[in-house]
Length: 308
Image 1 (cartoon, rainbow, N blue to C red):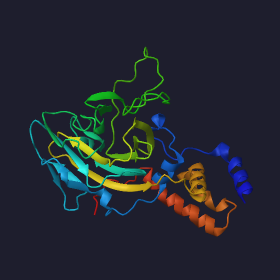
Image 2 (tube, one colour):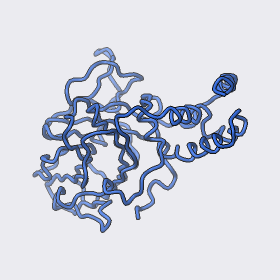
Image 3 (cartoon, rainbow, N blue to C red):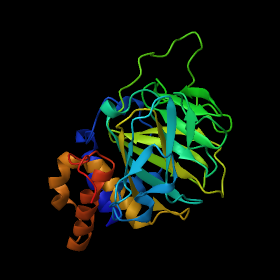
Image 4 (cartoon, rainbow, N blue to C red):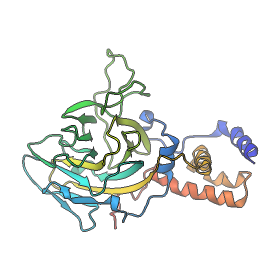
């Protein structure tokens, strides 16, 4: 059966086409099978405790919604403020969705992770998430990465591939000649950003417009609790958090990997060809369900619908 399926796929390889493309696709990095399966899995319930902001670990200038899934920064002058999730993680690979409208960001809009000791408020307007050694942040307007109070690089890298090793807690730099300047115009980051934290490997990355942009930070401390977090200086900023899914360090199941490979090969535009696969009805049904879960990686049209 496997040989027949492989032959069927190879005969149609020449006619395959990408199922999704965007301005970020040229900067995309192929995700690991572990991450790809997590992104393609059906999201957990919005009521999951990891989808809530913490009332205790937020600046007093952040107001929480009744469901704790949204924070709103109250108008306050000369103040930088942090909001952290109610629950952190110590192990596994985890993905959160952050919804933050570009029109409600202003300057110094940062998304990332922090330990529990990260400061929640500071005077003046600055990048508070990433200001110390306990937090790592991506400033969305400038595309700069921040850690220990300084920028450690631009993200995503304005290149095709990123191979060189990074220092602890810093961005993976590109193999571009220092004489060649990178594009200085920052990319406009859309409302929906997926935060990818691999607590086992100690890495942090992001998914934008269905494209995994690679590892932003590595060398994050292992075995300690890390929390999704944001920092903002703009009054009226509304920021929503939702935990999508996660996985342990165990190897993915072979059946899940096979289903993911087939779905990626066919793409959404060729989903109707599922019935042509030389597979029994039970496996046909399984692959159909895999297709239905692919919307986690590709932004859905109703991504901005308020949480319940």
